[in-house]
Amino acid sequence: GLCRSIGVSNFLINHLEQLKEDCVITPHVNQVEYHPFQRPQELVDYCRSRDIVFEGYCPLAKGEALTHPSIIQLAKKYGRTPAQICIRWSIQNGIVTIPKSTKAERIQENCKVFDFTIAEDDVEILNGMHDGRHVSWDPSLIV
Image (tube, rainbow, N blue to C red; front, side, top):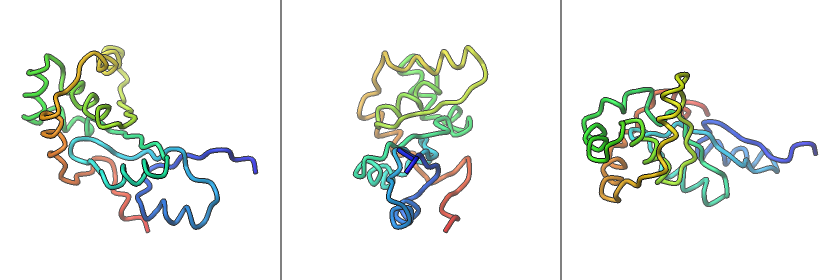
């Protein structure tokens, strides 16, 4: 009776369903890898339908997204950095986004994403980059 809310990390739908069978508390947040190459929309929709906040980590795909030609092209189009494009894309997709950096200038850069909007056509370009790639680890291997 002491727990009021819980958060989980890397829970897929089957993991959340198992948790529902074993517990009476629904998680308030599920922290999962989310970037243009890893966009688990079915999981996002599942979480939203159950009032679980989907929180995305690795929005830059551990740097892999920063050198992708489409992301570089969009960064030039919007006068932004590739990192800002990836972070803004996540936000526009309704994802609570956690960019990581230890450098003050990068932290400041990562915060400057609220004064522009990526056009829907360009969001669709980024959405279409999903190839299922994990840069962290693959939680589907956990039963």
